[in-house]
Amino acid sequence: EREEALNQAAQPAITRDGQLIEVLVNVGSVQDAIDARGADGSGLVRTEVLFQDHAPTVDEQVERFRAIAAALQGKPITIRTWDIGGDKPLPFLPQDHEANPFLGERGIRVFRRRPELLRDQLQAIRHVATETPVHVMFPMVTTADEVAWALQELGPRPEGLQVGIMVEVPAAALRIDTITEGLDFVSIGTNDLTQYTTAADRTNTSVAALADGLDPAVLRLIDHVVRNAGVRVAVCGDLASDPQSAVLLAALGVHELSAVGPQVPLVKARLRQADLSEVDTAEVLAARDAAQVRGLL
Ligand code: PEP
Ligand code: MG
Image (cartoon, rainbow, N blue to C red; front, side):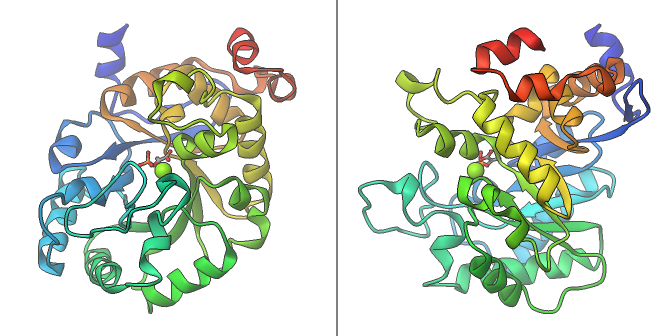
């Protein structure tokens, strides 16, 4: 079965009821992109993983983004701007000590006070976008004000550069209809959305059972975002890497999933076997806990 999934990896994932679901790959290195079999592009380039040791120049960033796009045969890549803070320190961007780093200056919040590193990155992204299909997205967005600020920092966009935000803060998910002005898409980060919805640290194994992406509370937020975003909705959190969950996300109306490399062919294969009209999403959303959701799937 795995063999068959690999053989068909490059084919599109079309469900039995005829829905095309794009399955992309999450990358943190050029090698991740080279290794990706059958991905329809990259739905998440983690730039804070891509550049670890020193603050890269604009040219270094351009070169690395170009290499990722080339490894994916020029299919669209979604570059996420620096997502720093919480579990992701960057040696070249020291942060103040915080009592609760996951609730502190993370993602886009870091750059309001010192935008220089972000400006360099946006310059590199704008440049690459003139050569190859590129999407850019901002992490940890909470408010409409942050979206407006990010769009201003981005400046005039080259034609074809699509702009989005990650939805991984419950407040942003709940009032998604008020924060997508000027955006082309949103991408749901289920890892952080789950962490913040369940108040369970994603790095703390003793509460791992609580931080379950199939918790109906998380699924209700995803459903709410799909219905109210008014723009294209993708999912790039780990939930998209699980074939069974991928079917549920597709049934909820998410038509773009980004998974870890080895899971891409398996997610595609599972989607091809699925009939989305047979998934009772109302029953899933009404479930009492993640275990019951798993039973239903
Ligand atoms: C997420 O939060 O789901 C996500 C994709 O971003 P990261 O795991 O890099 O925080
Ligand atoms: Mg995240």
